[in-house]
Image 1 (cartoon, rainbow over the protein chains, first blue to last red):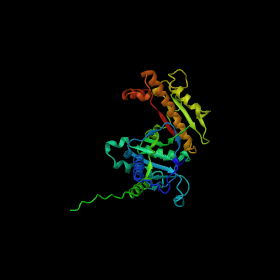
Image 2: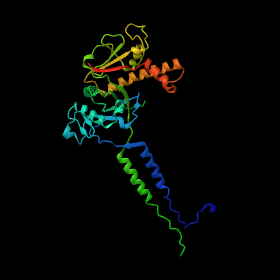
Image 3: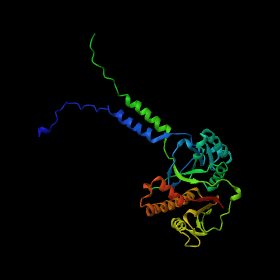
Image 4: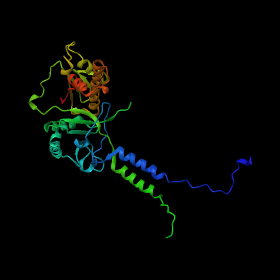
Length: 156
Length: 171
């Protein structure tokens, strides 16, 4: 029995934390690769609708984003709670502003790439189609015909 | 000169630095969610509106303000839409109310202002799924290959034969 008895008085060695930085660096690299920089601060709440037939947006620099949703609690006082349109960093006053927005974004890209500009409609799922139809109408007027309805993968 | 033993650098603060970097990236980045349903809008031409009414090549799909789905003015369930679209596209003139050939088949999707966006997207999704199945079947029967394995020229040939023509409007 005494074979298995511990020799008393010996201290347990401290656990080495030398590999902790390595673990953290692996986590860091994962997040650096898997995420992208936040381009704009969202002023509207958006919960994307679910769909199955999704396609990835390819060239990030050739995508314009239009956000539609109810203003977040911070901006509710100023803009009310009805769904609003956000273009870049501000809330649009009227739907017609989209035309200027598209023309402005279009002037930033190379001329022969204008045809491949895509407009990504990031619309909250609880919005009614009225506001979306108005946006589509405006986009047609400025010949921005390639659009993408943002959605997330449906899991079933 | 005295020879000194190389001093060991204390690396215990390395993890703190790494943690700071990690937290920074967690805060300023978001996960890539750039996915969605691709669509092509028709050009703006007020004169050309509403000329496609009573055409056998046009499948009329309506979504009303109560989020009900109507195909050719008949109320149907969402699950039925896919097979109706496939019948319409692959009709080849056999039924008088469906299309003459796949390259002329058009789906006219109309909605009310009060229709919910979520329901609209789910219907759009069904239409795209129906077309994807049609393309997959065509790829199998024509080239004996799954759609993903097709070359660029075959794929182009297929999409010319089965163009996805969805017109979106309000009613």
